[in-house]
Length: 192
Ligand SMILES: [Zn+2]
Ligand SMILES: [Zn+2]
Ligand SMILES: [Zn+2]
Picture: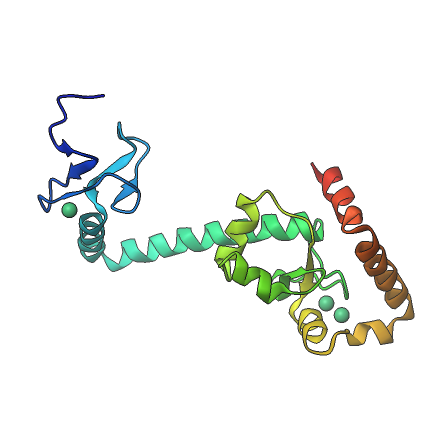
């Protein structure tokens, strides 16, 4: 469309840094919404070396500050997700543990590892995935202890210690598997 862009040759674009013609796609150039063609000025390789050089110039204090703000962002995201699935304040669906450090996101029907593998995300990446995908159903909040025991032994000692909890949890689990998540869908609809 832009005839004057002579830097374009048959779908390829000239990278002004390394002076090479590379395919004008997302495999060779990064996405950049601010530019007219939506692609970064330099090719991916050059953008990477540029970024590395830039990072090397940063002082220790600047690097620390970046790390801190990244940590704060992750903390905020984690709280958002824990609140969505575990209420306010978020707590373990099994024992009621409320200390945030102990809480994890658990797959109600198991298969957490497999699922995380299919979405190719672990740790923080999994949290971003949850947000990007609009808080999918089938997840809940557990503490590390309850999560571990359920994963390794298929039950939690809390089940035996408190008959009440056992009944409540079993009933909800049964209802969950029978109605394929309607209970949780209903709950998250209320949240919205
Ligand atoms: Zn280049
Ligand atoms: Zn627990
Ligand atoms: Zn438990």
